[in-house]
Image (cartoon, rainbow, N blue to C red; front, side, top):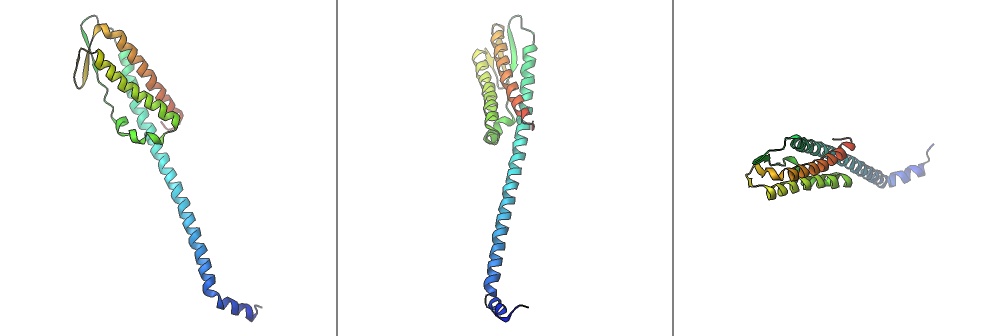
Length: 169
């Protein structure tokens, strides 16, 4: 069946053939492991991105809710009225992770966070007294207070809607 010359050649190059087959096996294994590692990394990034969207949306929803309550408040008749400071909890710690979001999401989330910080600075400027937790504002500043609340709430609502459109928030 198999002639003796072919057997002699196979016997002579047996080590070489085993080396070639082994080398091809190693290359195939390395490529498969690399593909699996890329897929796992992609899954991990997706999970982190999804968690980031949910956390940011939840925090921003709370801020928007508080700002809308301010908009529904009764105008003070005279004297001072008190407003609590917004303390960003997660969004400050997650700033480095914002790069996981899509570019459009980053833009609106950063705009919302800048609006929150801008509101804080604006309230500091128009307040008659400020503590670590509250601002005391004169009743004459009511319209300005309502306007900054409204624009900040709109920016936050837009960020929440954008995060929710991704389907992960």
